[in-house]
Every structure is written in C-alpha cells, then in structure tokens.
Length: 231
Image (tube, rainbow, N blue to C red; front, side, top):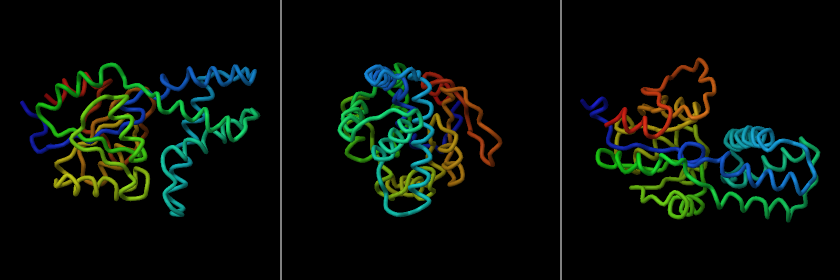
C-alpha cells in the first residue's frame, strides 16, 4: 500500500544526510591536529566545527548581507574552531585544509536505496551547498544522476529559509504537498514541514529532536529504512 500517494518527488539534503561529513573529514582533521602537535581529539574538533558552521549559516541568513556560500561558512567555522582550541594556522594552511571537502564520501547504503526509490519518485538534491560544489559531489563523490540538483544559491539564503523549499517546488513544477524532504537534520524537517512539505527524518546521529511545532511524517535509521518505508 502506498503510504504517500500524493508525493511525486523526494528532495534530499546532501551534507550529513547523503554524504558522511564526519567520517570523511575526521581523518584529515586528525592529520592536521597531529601536524600542529595538538592533543585535541578529532571528534571534539569536528563537533565544535560543525556546530559553528551552522551558526555561521544562520547568521549569514539573518543578517541578509549577501549569501556567502556553503564552503565559505565552513571555512569561517574552521577558523573559529582553531581559535577556540588555540591552534595557529596561516591563511594558506586553512585554504589547503579546506580541499578535504573535495573528498567527501556517501554513506554506504545511500546509492542502493536510491536505485530502489527511483522506481517510484523523482529524486532531487536540495542542498545548502554551492551550485558548482554540488556538481562535483553529486557527479564525482556520490556518483548519482539526480533528476535535479537545486542549490540554495537560487534564493540566496540557507535552509531552513522558507523561500528555498517553495522555490524548489516551483522549479520542479509541483505543489509543496507533492514533495517530501529527506534529511538527517531537524531544522530541515521543521523548515520544510512549515512550508507544506511531507518530511522523512533520517535519524543517523541519535540526537534529540526536541519539541518543535512540526514533526516528521516518518522516522528511519538510514536510507535502507527510507526505501522500506516508502515502497
């Protein structure tokens, strides 16, 4: 039985939902910290960095001073985390380290699940990533031909700004209620649901969801569970 007969497209968050950020970047972080003779644990550094990047993104959107882009907010978050731990790094060292983002890998179950899901849905990447960077990671790292790849660049604000979800539905020539957001991030679930999307929460990190005004329509552990729930 089709649980969501009205849904025509699944829109996927990319960074942290499809791509394994921590698993991909922590080896680079470990090597960098070792080169700096720092005793900071790579996991601790990553946790602080990831949290700060989100703050940089929210700040970028709220101030509306012009969209900085995903990689730039990641760079700013990295610099902030270096300062937090008292680690000195030159501009060139930071620039060189940021090339690690070119080598992200997807979670292992993602592509097999997409193969299953494409038989029923249009599959779309809807990401905070820069457009040119999304071209790289979808083609060369995920190696999946999405039906469309939509960057928040088209609106100029980071998710969960409502304009992103509405613009994506319009670009797909669908009503918002015909789209389902798939994300491992509660802010993405809340933002998309507030705009009328259905939403699937991929609970990869076992973090608290909290008590927000909008809940996901389904919760799954990974993309295998997502395919099982939707097909």
